[in-house]
Image (cartoon, rainbow, N blue to C red; front, side, top):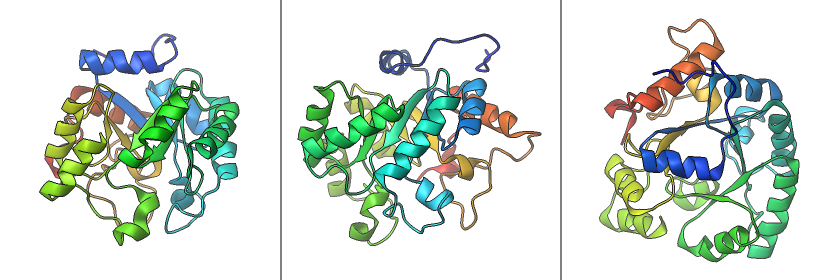
Length: 258
């Protein structure tokens, strides 16, 4: 079976992601910040692209994602949307932009108008009302739980979440960087697709920061990252290798999990 795009494909939609999850087909996601990479990722057959606030680290040189603004995300979302044809476009709501349901809605509208088809926000049960408010107003939501970078100061650093019984129970109640057993439990507990990063192979799909999987981000490489450029002749070949590895279940391996 091939996962490369030899023929035009239909646009990836939220119902399609649900169908993939129910059929057991792994969902692929990478971060993306510009039109050129968006076109390449789409051509390779990636299911979803994420305009992550990780752009604060990999593009702007910040040590955290906290300085990233809504204007930053909207700009890069518009760039990605212009280069993309069929992948589902997801945009991060950055730090400080969803303190209330109304604020979250207003800022989500900005991102949707820029080209996003779904928004992502960080937080668990305390955001349930906000998520419901957005969905009722036709804004699909991706909820980010576990290692939430916008909470770096509250956590005291970038630390794996859900390692204790109480922490694991909270993650299940809330249903990146969580132990594999917890990732599997969350995936089984919820009906929505669960996309993991460092959360083991049993999630509905996987996401990596594009610069990490291409081996071009300086500094210590996180345990959950694999450099897919190794042994490849081009960036597109590396992306295609990533897609194959996620789809066939060979990535992530035990060495990429906690």
